[in-house]
Image (cartoon, rainbow, N blue to C red):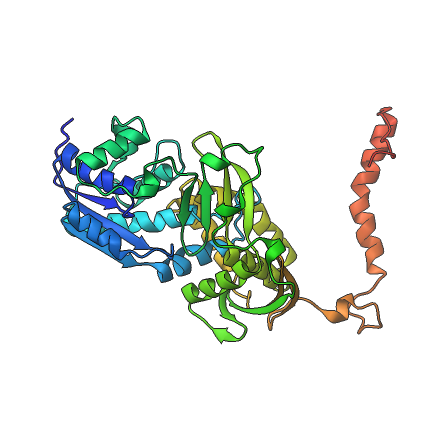
Amino acid sequence: MSKKLKKVVLAYSGGLDTSIILKWLQQTYGCEVVTFTANLGQGEELEPARRKAEQLGATDIRIEDVREEFVRDFVFPMFRANALYEGQYLLGSSIARPLIAKHLINIAREVGADAIAHGSTGKGNDQVRFELAANALDPSIKIIAPWREWAFQSRTQLIEYAEAHQIPVPKDKRGEAPFSTDANLLHTSTEGKVLEDPAEIAPSYIYQRTVDPLEAPNEPEIVVIGFEKGDAVSVNGEAMAPAALLTKLNELGGRHGIGGIDLVENRFVGMKSRGVYETPGGTILFAAHRGIESITLDRAAAHLKDEIMPRYAALIYNGFWYSPEREMLQALIDRSQIHVSGEVTLRLYKGSASVIARASPASLYSTDLVTFEESSGAYDHHDAEGFIKLNGLRLKSWAMRNARMAAPAIDLDCA
């Protein structure tokens, strides 16, 4: 197979690894390299990435602020589903990859590139996410994954290559980094090195976005979040666009030590990994959304959402954002959110975001039905007798059959 390509679009962070990849692509494929750097709210100055790409000979340098698109079109639809992977992970890294892939493909079409390239390693999930998204968006595009192709076997070899090609090597990259970090407006993830042994307690210095809950303010803070059709639209009565709203919740959550978790997860590629994730604003938003749904969703609709949520979350985690099944589930989820509007009041205190009140013009909650006091008669206590008899009929039949067949008796002492 010929390695000659005309033009490649590279997902470029400006860091050492993607800078090495930029030069490696030029040498290995004899191609022009177009770089794409997404401002996802990672909190880093991106102009240095532009300057480094220029120094390394990139022919076209794209830096785009995609924060609003990220929250509006990816984070919010995911939060309508209350998506959690393996019961804990709010999918902060996973949901960013399809957005980056979308822009890589769009730029490749615009500039007439033969291929796209990414810097994901051969052991991680991100390589799968980038490439499955690209397959769905442009089946004809070639995908280059340098970590699966090049001959470098160690960090030392990478640094030697960088030095030989005048690629700046920061002092903190010359030794082995204590951990690897990925960040965007939704979360910060930390993995590797000091976290590789799950039996060891994570050092406190890895937390970058949230204070230790024990060091959080001793007074709780009350916050009110407004929703329209399942999406948050205001904080404490102030209307906000999606990215600004999540930024505000991050500030509140970080200050109160909310959203830090230490977990071992099952990667799609087949191994377990340990990471520390900080999702302060997302954790508040998750609790608030469940709070507003509790009074606006029908019981069966809410339970159905809970049943499909693990499947939906796994699709995002595994890289299937652009898949027919995710789109089908999204249509169902979005339909459920038509009346999910109102306000939720939460108490933020030392690592927790607790719903303490909720109100909606579309509420299904009826004080008249649940009150212990005299009501209008909408609920007749006698109706429960027939309801219980009908539901108990099959249990009676089952018990009589077991007695007839001398089945072992149920141990009533078992808890």
